[in-house]
Structures are given as structure tokens and as C-alpha cells.
View 1 (cartoon, helix red, strand yellow):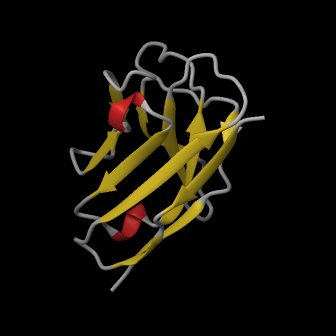
View 2 (cartoon, rainbow, N blue to C red):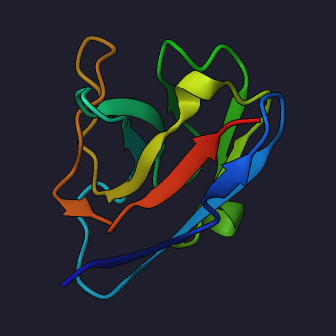
Length: 124
């Protein structure tokens, strides 16, 4: 059974930065890709960022605009999401996700394993 443990959420002022981390343990993987999705109140869950098993390929949601960076040191089971220039509209619960399938026509779909979610609030 794959378990995902997230940390790093919290309250930050607009323009600030925050780093989320997610460590995967247990179970077996197919693609080994990991990533993040988020869900704001009253909105659908949306794709944020993903990284391949080797760390050699990264993908980002259209809204990111170069503000976020996903990394996976040593191709290990921990991924980091560095978020800069945060905006109020980035406020959401951020979910770690594992075993994402390969993107199809540029669209990233979630894998079957989810973390419990961590709250990110951007407010002055």
C-alpha cells in the first residue's frame, strides 16, 4: 500500500514563498511519476505540477507561469514543490499524487495514490 506524507503548507502573504514536500513509502509503482494537484473551495481539483521517476521530465499547469518548481533530489521518493510569488488565488488544499500515467496530448491525469492534502492560504 503506497502512502504519501505531505508537509509544508501554511499561511503566507501575497508575493511570498512556500515549499511543500511529499514522501512516498510502501507499495509498488508503475510509472513512478509524482506530482501535485490542488482544490480550492467550490472549484474542481486541478493539476499543479508533476515530475517523472528519474526527475528528468517536469510538467506544470498553465496557471503556474514560471512561479513554481518541482524537484526530486536523487530520483528518490521525496518531491518538493517550491512556490514563489504566491497569489491569493493560489489558496487551496494541495494534494500529493503518485504513479501518474504519461501525459496524453499534453494533458496530465492523476495517478491512483493520493496524500491527505495540505492547506495553503495566501492572505495579508
